[in-house]
Image (cartoon, rainbow, N blue to C red; front, side, top):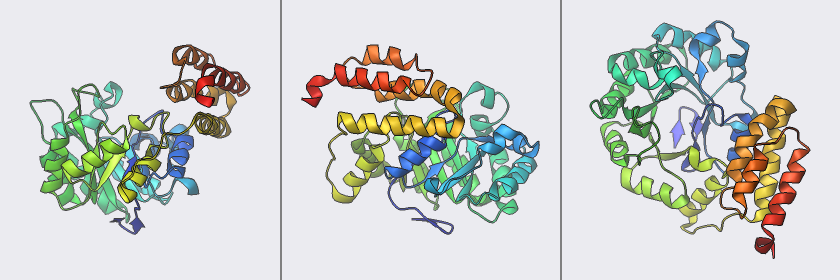
Length: 325
């Protein structure tokens, strides 16, 4: 499918995840076949105020393309001005966050709080679409709570205002990430609009992705938590979709090698001190399903310098000798 002048090849895209899906992780997932990704959400107000940390979120490396830059805020004019700044980095699209459930975002009238004001959603999309000459997309939720399930209404308003693609997370803001995602709301949005729709929620395997595509009719599936410690999920989804055959899971040595490459990139981009601190959560995710995972996760939480990775890897090998043999 095409989004503006960008061709998106494949069916699985990487979700924007603040504090997780940074440049190192995005590059890794794209190398395993993610067809599109969205950067960590950047504050529209922060961009206009020339906040250095916010501006750093806009950088796009060649290995991450096609990539959208995601903005959050609630003032149409502010988002439009921020979009102009973001567009200078030549992203595939400007994505408006209308789904983040985090209290610090929603309590500031942004993210999923926008779902409570569909007309404002439309004004935001209209302002941003008029400010830039690249596609504008939105990421929404099922609604704010069970009493205000309005994803279809918001999607229609955003499409009329100029949104060229809509991602739908099948939970309300009140539900956060806990109960099973409602894929039927994704199907309802797909039937209600003519622009491409991305389904989001509970895709943890290639089988899940195929089921979502079949049950909802969505154009793309978005993988978030299912990719944590598991970037090869995109390779598996592509194989299942293109060849209708499952791929075997990665072997132990591939898992170790990918984990090491991931952490090295983290340290390269953020410096060893910050990189290794963030490596603790990522390495813990890579331990899922391994023998001795509980002990290994304790070691992950103690990582302080890149040299500590050698001791972690040795421990992984020792705990999983039967897998190797």
